Image (cartoon, rainbow, N blue to C red):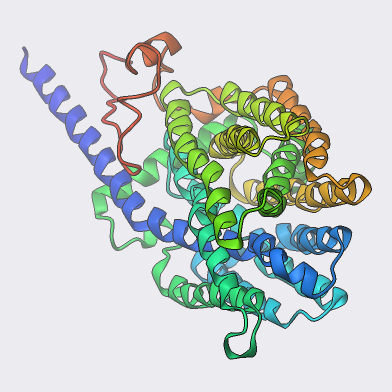
Amino acid sequence: MSSSTTVAAASSSARSELEISTIRAISWRLIPFLVLAYFFSYLDRVNLGFAALTMNAELKFSPTVFAWGAGIFFIGYFLFEVPSNLALEKFGASRWIARIMVTWGIISAGMALVSGTWSFYTLRFLLGVAEAGFFPGIILYLTYWYPAEYRARFLAAFAIAVPVSTVIGAPISGLLLGLDGALGLKGWQWLFIIEGIPSVLLGIVTWFYLTDRPAKANWLNAEQKAWLSARLESETAAKQAAVHLTLSQALRAPKVLTLSLIYFGFVAALYGMQFWLPQIVKAFGFSNAQTGFVTAVPYLFGTVSMILWARHSDATRERVMHVGLPLLLTAVALGACGYIDNPSVTVVALIIAAIGTFCTFAVFWTLPTAWLSGTAAAGAIALINSIGNLAGFGGPYLIGWVKEATGSTSTGLLVLAVLPLIGGLLVFLGGHESKAEFAGAGKVPKLSKALRTNAGGIPGKRLCKPLLAVPRVRRDDPEKN
């Protein structure tokens, strides 16, 4: 081997090690904290489903009143989503995310003051206003830190808070209802108070802990900052060379509208299940505590599936099949629930629906971030999320309306299945900007080769690594490019 070849190989190895150490440092610094923050965000948003097990009867809420209260959160969320995300871009993640968390925690705990229909509607609406911008803000924030080929797995690592909030939160919420009568408060009031306070405390910590941009990260060394800056700037330049949109152009782009409709179908399935699943399970005769543990089962399967699915999407650099197929699976599983009366079989169908839902969630946000950047990305991501989250109103309300009309929640799930079905079909029709997403990241591996490295085509050994593990990939090896 010549000396020049040896030097080139050593340089490639050094750069590869630098990349690995940088991604690892970012991941251990940001992901656990963001997962914890999103855990409480989502818990405070959906613990209403468990509060309803006793609150609805005590406050004499009909299924339609409960559905309106569950859904009106998303009206406030929709109205303030885009302005909130633009504010994060302007003021920085640490300050704006801290503001969001403190205000939503206070309002969530304030749900204990609900005494009738209008106070219920008002506080749920204000909770949506307070929380607007958190999720799309974090999606945008992660694009400041991760190159494209790492995003699916680390977006999934962040989004794992959604199923985990149910895996852990469902049993806890069921048990908190048992505090009924303590200090003169109802069990559902204790649930809101105890689950709201941690968000306030974590919001205060956020102000001091989060770093707005890589340039300000004193926990990265100079070499790591230089590598990350060069890599992200290269990807941004490639995106803008392919398609450079202003904020107004991005908000009017047909592709943004299509992605919004796809996300609408996903969110309808997610929240339709989330708000009504405890009542579906309780109807089989379980106690409140048992309902909490049974409800957690589908989300446990969803948690594992979304991580493996996201890693597989990154490994194959394929997005369309990894978003479209899970949506279609969700639609089939929810539709099947409308024809099933056996409790055990219903739980199996809901497990399949949860797997499809969270596999979609794991990869979806790689679609808009592949071709959007800067302020256009901030606005478009917020718009997609806000329009999609209107389904958080429509999905639960649709099930509530069908339940009041037919007396069956399962029939509502059958009707709801149409929305993820449409979303799945739109994914395949819309396609994906793969060239823009992976510009400068090396050759796209052939699918057969990627599958061969996974135990004969089954995502297994190579994908089952610790959540924050970074694969050793040498993209800049001259012999491979």
